[in-house]
Image (cartoon, rainbow, N blue to C red; front, side):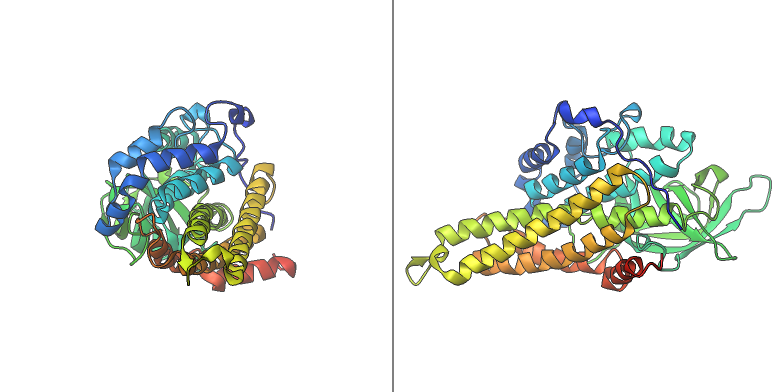
Length: 395
């Protein structure tokens, strides 16, 4: 089945306006606002709402809270490729994978499905406030596997005059949960269909608790417990029982591309540290750069970064072109980026030592968080079959 995908290019002319280079804009902004506190926030496992507000409302140029939201709804009106560059620059400048992941989930995973499948009422209610940073949208990374995993939440029609739906179940690994205004939740029906819902935090029967992985410390993590949570019919995102061909494949592509994008920035920062270390560190009285093995390691590191960039940018370009969702390209990009992040992290650590001379501990954070990246998005168990199915023409 061909899956129609939303046109992400909303304002091609925006690239000629303020902040025309989104990568440089985000890198400078994050380096100025986020990097000075990255190490402290990571140690404290802290989310800084004031920092997010500054990143969201930065001028000139596109704010980072809603780059793919149309300008008419208060967003940046950026293309898919520009959104990718913004997240890359955010991670490179901040040297903070957790912050970049949180922004990616809110700014892309939580907004684009509303833009693509939301009703006019939903788009007008949620998107302007999300683009401004006033409302934070959260998504469980358990729901971004393209429907390969059965939903942990069930939906049944509510009885009585009010109508609507009752949602029951539990979701963990919810990025942004402690600070979110609302959540994107996919639920299964008794007959096997699936429906996506926008569930506001104030919904009766919804309990939000803080809980997260031993990684991505600066991303706020939580768990949702839904105990017969009642949502109205207007909370349905897309069509009833249509999530399997609407929201779920879109969430998968967005996760695979845009939660991988920050790692391109992290790898560039690590590569820069490694080159500097090769020039400045000495081994047996000679600079590391004079060692042939060091030069080979730098060449391999640079190759990994460039290949990752090519795969991600190619997939983002497909999103801008419209047409069917690029599931195979997105899965291949995520599969490679996850492996490259671990390889680059190890290579950079070998050259810079456990702590690079920047003193901010990026090597340690990247080593810890790259393993998390390889286990999310479905991991190789989901990504490889998606690539193989496309090659074999199995849909």
